[in-house]
Length: 439
Image (cartoon, rainbow, N blue to C red; front, side, top):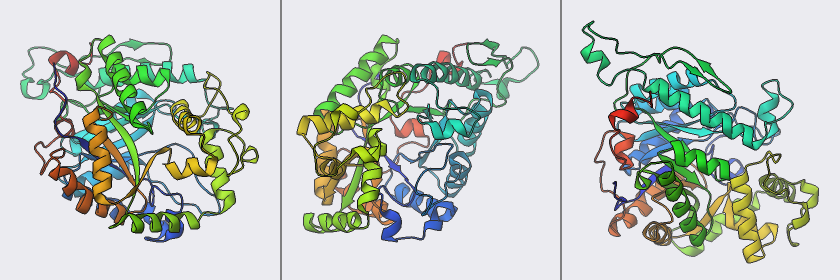
């Protein structure tokens, strides 16, 4: 049985120009930075200086954002290969969809990233809600929720088997006396994959698997397959309940529940004083027009912007109930609606509490560190995915001022103790059976 780590894990979620919707207008860096590899390697090196576990890149195979103010988005696997080459210890986590990829190609690409990085790679498996991506792949709209998660379950299973299709010591033992590479021979509802993978085991055994769904289907997918869960809980009570539920589900799948890392997201605006932090938050908010705020809230909640008034009670009768036909993210929707109902928030108040779909913390480094420590010690998170307001300064402030406060509290490492992402996360070494990919 694995014991819960005594120190938290921390990932840096590099959301374009920053986690705040007005990061572009704030103008810390030009909008073209999102297609400049040096921008991302700079943020990764800042994060590595603080001994953070990983940098994380979200993704979706569709244009997202304002067509009048577009920013580019590089392919995460390609970009993180460059980031890995420019860094030494920090992990790299790439998002890739199970709905718009094939398991054989993706298994090869993620395994290649893990080899190139020396065992520092992870795959964030998402099913991709919404119709925009589906229409880019010749479909009328996104598949039903249950279909997406059935496909995702089979997809991850095939990828894991491909990663384990070579014997653990195949390259070293290749003396011609026995077969060391095994075809997976998979025939399923969605995929047929006959042969073996193209690569041996990686320096950490196989890439780390991350999952970010919080619906019933998403929770089961994560509990069955994932090493870490990115999640959206906005209150301490919800965080504790979610973590307990995920560990219970992992145990029901025959897994060690403490070998699953729960990592809620946290959006941050940090100042040397509380007043300074709120001044910056107000300045960022001032760049957003009323129309932008309405569109942002409506999109997040899955309703038409015409149904939203920023300062009136939320139109509860208009909200889609999480069901098989709802094509927005169930987990994001439920987390935000639960918070709004519990505290009777208007849309404007809700957006002041949540950024990028996650809990928002505005304050000093000491206050941010105290919040993270409280959640960690209460069991609401084994670590956190940090989303600063603007890059790269938000990452630098977090590393230079919040990380030392966490170290004073004894909840974060002083330096790296491992060379692999699995080691950074405190995950146990994979068993021979796990490395074999359930052959």
